[in-house]
Each structure stands twice: as structure tokens, then as C-alpha cells.
Length: 238
Length: 180
Image 1: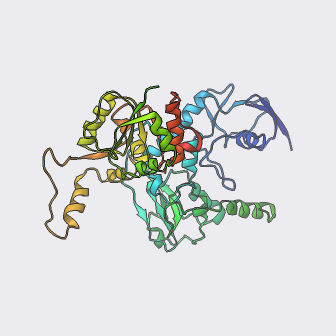
Image 2: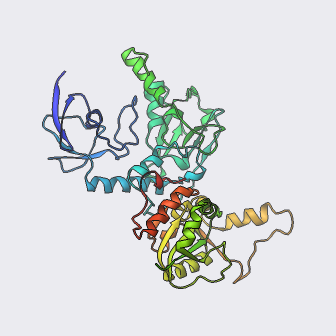
Image 3: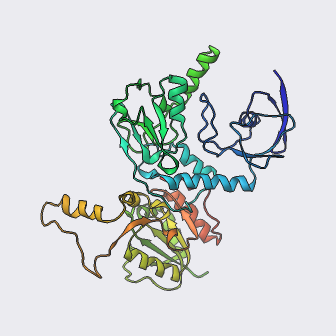
């Protein structure tokens, strides 16, 4: 196991060579905001919240998919990054209809938490107010596209952990939507095993247990990590 | 010290933010020593006065009367605070925005589900016309401070008011910024 030495926010850090900048930073107690990342799922660098500055590279790099390297110098919290992160969170709020006050995930929502983390007191961009469907055809779960941030956690949990690949994404840009099977109603999906892993993974109020009302949708996210650790390391630990 | 001239306004909202303001309980007595309420839906004052120090605006911008009021409020107020989620984000009143215009809402409310006499109320100069899109107040006028929450808790309102009393409206931070 080779060890790499790098600098993150002026701290000298040793990390294993297979680790990402995000993992190394977390081990060193340096917090970087994330949204699409979820322990147990493959990293895709989709949400861009964990972007960091790496000396010698002009473009900002997502910490979740950038491997550590010897002598790397990383800055995680410059004014520029703080400005971009707030912009990203505001754009997520502006893109769909996130009405926190009437959302099943109110108070237990990672998007809402990010708003606090980046100091968002209002959204400076025009709200797009798109027409979004709510699919309640599944007998146990529902999906509300008004609240979806396209983090792809449901897609990855379903594909990587459950192995069903019921979820995917169709469309482009602001017209992108998560779909079940070939855009059939969720309740008519033949591949869905009703395991509920997508419900555990969803960071917002987009995927929820039916019957949940405002603020009731809490999730036991540790269960996904538990399954992955048990499968990969044969360790049944919480 | 002169009393701070305080106004509170209720646009397109449910008045829950004003209810939460009343939840300040005993602090209202301390506040009464320092502020003079010059305009409010809970005071019988008909016109928005001039030379207001601080105005708390509850509610989203939903009709043409709100546009008119906001222009007057901004002109006559030193500090304007977006008071609660409807003022800050549009919130529940903005849930009609995806329908594209006010007409589907009016049709549904006054025609489709009417038991008797289905018609859309219209009376120029008396019933304000709904805007096609409900907007947060910072879309219309400059806002000096944002006080989110649905409603903002009394503790959060107090935190904002205490900043104003101290003459340092630096804005809220941390968990006081949570929407919803």
C-alpha cells in the first residue's frame, strides 16, 4: 500500500494512493460540501459542490473523483469556491420547485442543509417553475420530480447495490428527469424489486415513502453503507 | 434615543409570520419601549407613512396592488426586510407558477368548484388583478435583509430585530437561514 503525501488547506496530509482528495480531506477533519456523493455508492462528480483548487491545474477538480497524488497542493475553501458553491445551491433551488415548507423532507433534507452551509439567505436567480409530475403509482413509494436535483443517487443505488437498474435519466439539461424502466409509471416497472434503496439514498424529498407528510421523511442512510460493507468486507458492522 | 419607526406589511401570505412575531411574548414589551409601530395589519392605520426606519414585509408578490405597495414601501423605508419564506422565495403562493398564468387558478377556484353563481370576480380598482407569476419581493425591490422560515420562529425574529436595534443589520447566519 503506497502512501502519498499532499497538502490540503495548508495541512500536510498522508493518504493511501487509492484514496480521493475528498476521502483524504475527511480523514484529516477537513469538511468539503457534497451532494451527489454517498458512502457506499460509486462517485460521479455530478453535483460540482466538492470542486477544489489544485495547484498547477487551471480547471477546478471535483474532490470526490480526484485521486491523491504526491506533492499535490489543494485548496478547498477559497472565496472563489465559496462563491461557486453558493451559486450551485441557488441554481438547484431555482431549477425545480423546492417548496421547503410543504416538503416531506423539510428538516431532514441535504439540499436544505447545503443552503445553510453555503450561507444562502435567498436565491438570486429567477425561479424556472417547471411543470413536474408526481408519480404515486407504486404501492409503497412515490417520486416527486419537483424536488429532484438529479444527483443520480437513486440510479446508482438501484444499479450498484440492488442490481436492478430500474432508475435512469432521460432528457437533457433542465428537461432531464429520472425515470423508472423505459419511462413507465413506477408501479408498472417490471425490474423494480421494491427494495427501497432509492428511498434511503435520495437527499431531498424527491423519493419518499407513501403516506409521509410534511417533515416526516427521515432516512436511515447507514443501511446502504451497512450492506456495501457487509458485501465487500464481510463485516457486519454499523 | 428616538423610537425606531417600525412598519409591518402583509402581502401574499397567510399572516403566519405576523403570528410568529406575536410569539415574541415578553420581548414585545421591551420592543415597545424602543419602537413605534407606524403601520401594520394589526394596527388601524390606513396609509403607509413616510420616513419609516424598518419595514418587515410578509408574503409574496401575487397581485398588482402588491407591486404598488412595494414601490411605496421601498421609497419610504430605510431598511426593508423580507419577512418569512413567501417574501424570500415565493413559497406556497408560488406553487401556482408552473401553471403558467393566473387563469387556471381563477377558473378552478371560482368556476369549476363553485356551488352557485360561478364567475371570476373582477372589479377594476377594487379587486386587485393577480399576476401570472408569483415572485419573491427581492425580484421587485432592493431588500436589505432576509429573514427566512415558514414561519420564522420567534427566536429567529428576535435575532434579526436585535441586530436592527443594535444598528448592525449584518444578516442572519447558520441555522437561522433554514427555509421551511
